Image (cartoon, rainbow, N blue to C red):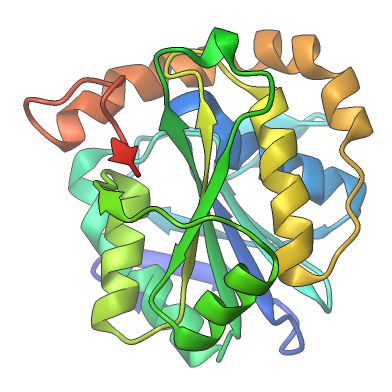
Length: 249
C-alpha cells in the first residue's frame, strides 16, 4: 500500500487482530516492549515500511540487512517497530498511511506504546501505567482491567500523530503509556507496560527475561536513545526531549 510517499510492504495474517506500535520516544519503552514481545513469541518478520522521507539507513541483525522499520506477525498479533526516530517531515505522512492500512485490515485492537517522562523516576519503584482510548468498548475493557486513564495532559510526537489520525479516520485505538526516564532506556518501565498489555490483549508474555537483560538493553540501545533525544525536540518547537510527551493526570 502507498500513501503520501510512504509504502507499507507486508504479508500479515488476516486473522491477526491486535497490532502493537513501538516507535522510539522517551525511555524507548515502546520499542523495548515490542522487541521483547517479538523475541518471546518468536514472531516472524512479515514486512517493512519504506519512504524517501526516511533517512538512508539499513540495520543488520544476524548478518542480514533489514529495514529499520519492520512488521512482525503471527495469527494473533502484529508488532510494528522502528529502530530509528521518525524524522519530523515523515511523521504525519507515516501516521496517515499506517491508520489507513490498519482500517483496511479491519484490526480490532491497535495499541500505541509510549513513555511518560517523570523527573523523579529514580525514586519510583513501580512505574505507573495509563491508558486512554477513543472507543467505548476499549474504555470499558480498560476499566474492567483496572488500568488508570489520564484525565488532562498532552501527547506529542509520532504517537500523537497516530492517535489523532486514528480519531479522524475513526479507527479504535488505545494509547498505553508508562512512567519512565526521559533520557535513558528503561527496561523496568517496559516490563510494567507489558504486564498491563497482557491484560488488554489476553496474552501471558513473561517479563522476567526482560528484567534480567535490563543492563544489556541499556547499553545496546544507548545510540538509539541518543538519536531519539536529538530528533524529538524538532517535532514540537519550544519543547525539550524531557517534555515530550508531557502527560499528567
